[in-house]
Image (cartoon, rainbow, N blue to C red):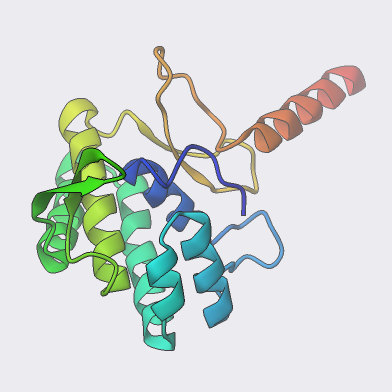
Length: 183
């Protein structure tokens, strides 16, 4: 599992990292097999309280959330993505609230870390709703370096991102270079 962006700060990056815990390129494909895997993931993305309290049911709920978020990245049109995101936001109780953390004020969504899947669902759906509202589906993508299917949110000015990470971009460039040499 490669982490790109800052899932501690960005709900969109958190969504990408969560979706990419199922990876068709890596072996094993599933990165959330055991409860400890979920706890490690939660620590990496800055959810330490959730990591301490995570249960086996949370693991199942987070995997279900991941599958639903993946539908947004695979959506054929905005209406399909909106339906998934609206349902997630409603179920998670993605109500914004202003909280003070470390001396600064931040907007937080959902029930907090006590309900792990609801917290992740609220944060990620709220962020992805903003992306869809501002850009439609043009900022969502999946990796062009087969067999990888890693998801990403394209933040480039020219909307030219094609790969989920530098590793995949380098791998694709090497494959293309070898193909040119053979030709």
